[in-house]
Image (cartoon, helix red, strand yellow):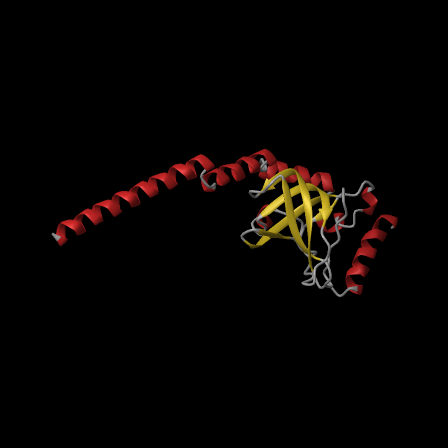
Length: 201
C-alpha cells in the first residue's frame, strides 16, 4: 500500500487543481507518432513564469530518440494554469514533446513526459507507464534507437558560416570599391562633357 501513496497523492493533487487529463496509455509504437521529439535530458535552468502563463526549461540532452534537436534544447511548458508543470535544475526527465510552431517545442502535464526518481517507490508515473524509468528508456532505445543531437561546436560553425556569407567588406575592400566607383563616375563625367562640347560645335 505504501508504494501507491505517492501515486494517490499525485491523483489528488491533479483533482485539487482541476486539471482534467484523459486516461493515459503506456507509451507504444503507435503513440510515438503523436510526438515530434523524444529524449532524456538534465535540466540546466528554468526561466521565470511569464504573463502568458508559459515558462521555458532548458535541457542538456543525454539521449535523443526522435527529432532533430540541439544538444542544449529549450522546452516550453504551462507554469500557471491548472495543468502547470514544474521543473528544477539537475532533474533528469524523459521528455515527449510536440511543436506548436516550427521552432517551439512544447510539453504538457497530460502527456507521457516523466521525471526520474532515485527512489522507485516515489515514481508516481510508473503505474500509468507500466514500466520503470529505466525500462522505458530501454524500450525507446530498442524501438527508436539513439540519435545524435546537434553539438555546440556544430551550432557555432553553422552560425559562423552564416555570418561569413553576410559579413560586410573589410576596410581595404571598402576603399577599393570607393576608388572604383569614383573612377567610373569620373569617366562618365568626362565622356558626357566631351560629347556636350562636340554637340555645341
